[in-house]
Every structure is written in C-alpha cells, then in structure tokens.
Image (cartoon, rainbow, N blue to C red; front, side, top):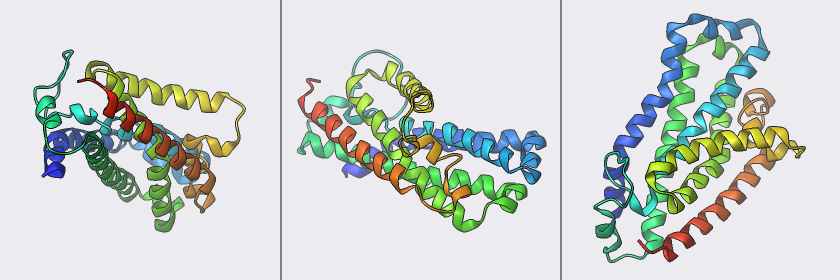
Amino acid sequence: MLWYKCWLETRFLALFMVLYAMFPVALFTLNPRPANAPQGSVAAVEGAVGFFAVYYSMIPVLLAGSGIKAQAGPRMTKGLYGSTYFTLSLPVSRFRLFATRAGIGMLETVGILAIAPCTVWIMFPPLRAHIAGSDLLLFWVTLFMCGSAIYFLGVLLSTILEDTWRGFASMFGVVFLRWLLSTLSLPPSVNIFRAMGASSPLFTHTLPWASMGISCGASAVLFLVAARVAQMREY
C-alpha cells in the first residue's frame, strides 16, 4: 500500500518528466539541422551527447520529489502538505517512509532515462550510423549510475528545503556542480557529467567504472544523510 500511495503522489510528476524528456526530440524534429549535423561529424555527436547529458541530468533531481512531504499535485505555497501528517501517522518508521519514496522515484528515473535516449536513437538515423545498440545500452547504465548521485542530491534537498524552493535549488545545484567539476583541476573520473558525455560508452565503448563507483559512493552518503535528517526533523 505504501508503494501504491507513493505512486499516486508522483505519477503526474513522472508524466511531466516524460514530456520534458521528449522535448528535445520534438525540437530536433521541427529543426532538421541538428539531426543531420552528426552524420559527418563525430565532434558534433559528442556535442549533442554532452547537451543531452546535462539536459537529462535534471530528470533525476526533479524526480527526487518532496520526500516524506510528497503530495499529489503541485504546490507553490509555503508550509506542509495536508497529507503530510497523515503520512507520518502511518504505522511505519520514518526511515521506511523515506526509503519507499526514494525507491519509487528511483524506479521512475530508471524508466524515463531508458525511454528518452532510445527514442532519440530510434528517431534519428544519423545517430544510429555512429552509435551501436550495445553502446546505447552501456550509455543507459552510465546515465543511471552517474545520475544516481544527482538524484540523491535532490533527495537530500527535499528534507531540508520547502517545496517552493526545492525545485529551483535542485536545478541550480546541477548547473553549479557541472560548472564546478569542469573548472576545478580534478581527476577526469570525478566529473560524472563527462562520463555521461564525451567519455561515455558511446565513444569509449566501455563503462566508466571509476566515475560510476564515485557516483554510487556519493549516492550512499547522500541517502544516509537525508534519511537521518528526515528521522530527526520536526514536521
């Protein structure tokens, strides 16, 4: 029942994120030049993949939702949702409530991140000329594994910020993290956006194990911190 409740609270957001993921497809369909550009230029393909890596990295952080405060439908006013107290009154621990909400959001993220790249690959033959189906599968694994750190960043923010600010803060956090990793002199494996872009399996034909390991480690830390905050917070 708890999983079903979480699904009811997040289904409209998941539908919106499917439309968000399909927006570049519609944009490139209306403007054929970006679709035809990669046909003779690998650099153009790398640029397109880099764009999609940043664009689709917004999906995990937004699907992280509102944690225990999750509610069906949008809300732009300050304060808790009416169903928050009902959720907290259920005979389950806060950790289970929080883990279930994080789990359903992760499953939705997996599905949408699988649909979006496959749709782009199927609809544009020039991309299929440069990208094999096996590499696309490895790219999906990379996108999910590296995106998990971004997802749990959103999960952590959901326990700290009001919903009015959480979405904006999450998107700003992704952009800032992208800029920070590109600016600092860090090992290439630390830059998860590069692992989803120019160094993705679409071009290297192998999984970026180091980047995925760093992302999984960061995800575990972020989740544990977020769960602790949710357990200690007074609602």
